[in-house]
Length: 125
Image (cartoon, rainbow, N blue to C red; front, side, top):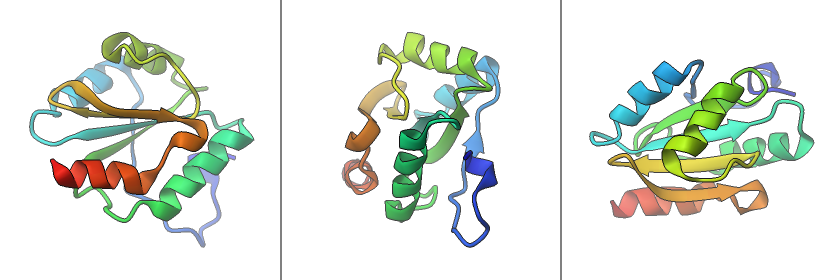
């Protein structure tokens, strides 16, 4: 089950999907203005789907604290590989990486992804 195939009864976050390496670099370029959250998700993985659903239930900030971006790993493996290369964070799925000023300020994967913890970090500045 993928991010765009969920039932309409769920509230979806205002995700922006990253579809190319060029778009990724544009997004990273904005991290001096506002932090960026990258959520890497495998649409064929039940654990990844559970993590995404949990994140969406817990996240209360919309895109006020950071831009929130989604990477479909199956369709955009090159983007995922570039994220690992640029950030130095080894690829995992599911995975969240938060960038501020082009630096990684938070990363987590699988059950360690905690939306409220990320929001707390972002609120502290």
